Image (cartoon, rainbow, N blue to C red):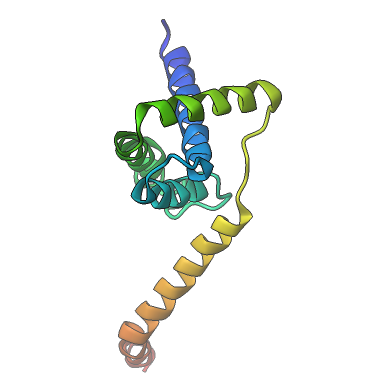
Length: 139
C-alpha cells in the first residue's frame, strides 16, 4: 500500500468520523457534554476558516492532524455505542447521497470573531507599548 493511498484512507475515515460527530450533535441519545463538544468540533471542522491558518509551516496542519482526531476520540468515548452506531449509519447515508462535505459559515464567523477578540485583547495589552516603540524607532 502506497503512502498516498494510506493518507487518502485516513482522510476518508476522518471525514466519516466528523460526519458522525455532526450527526451526534442532533441525536437525542447523545449525552449533554458530548453534544456540546460535538457542536464545537463539528462547527470548527466544517468551518471554511481555520483557527490556525494552513499556510503556517507545520503548525498550520496541527488542528487537522492532531486536534480534530483527538477531539473526535474524546467525543466518541462519551457517546454510548448504540448512539454511535446510529450516527455512523447516518454518516454513511450522507456520504452515499452527497459528494460534498457540509460547510458551517456560522462557525466560520465564530472563528473570525475569535480572531478579532484575540487581536483586540493583544492591542489593549501591548498596543501602546508597540506604538511607543515604533515612535522611538522612527525618531
